[in-house]
Length: 276
Image 1 (cartoon, rainbow, N blue to C red):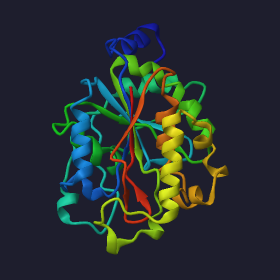
Image 2: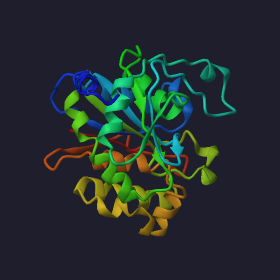
Image 3: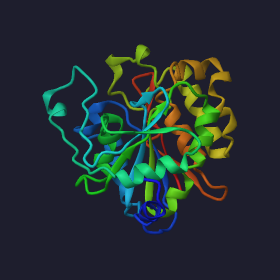
């Protein structure tokens, strides 16, 4: 699609809007898709504060690729990318439409980075398990942008900035992961204990939150250079990097607020971020 008519068609696909918020959602266990708990309530309360989007662009921890891809199919499948959970969770379908038009526009905005238009992935649980609480009728088109695992935090922060034009086209951009995410150290015996974290998790959460609320993003971008608490909180980057995309989209005068800001099972955090 490289003719002027094609480009005009794409740019006209989404009407101009007020600037949409940007979100980072701590998605936690896939079971949050079907359970009732304080975090699900937090997602639903958030939804009441959001303008109706034309479409959603989600950056999920669970699409970690070499290179950058964007889903471009008309009807993305619901991916059940987990094991060992009840059949009721595998039975969940989230039949939101895709948006090939938004995929192409995203690809163009990210030039000169090569972006593959993907026809195979769909919506993984990092996307649908939380978006279903925001839009339970699946009446908003959703696409996903993958995270290139070969690149640095700074790269992802700068890549996100190229997406800012989408915010005035009614596109809700959602990062989905967990800031503190060390599955090897999860205390399953205390999974239901409220706001429970190991000392290092408490330290990492407090440090990250202070940086977030102060607008001091560079230490968060350079997370690999930070304290031992950070290294324990972020042993691998895939659940953390969606936060960096959210921060890359923050305007200078916009406010950043936190919700669902609790630790879970010793080594996880559900902290979520709203920017508007």
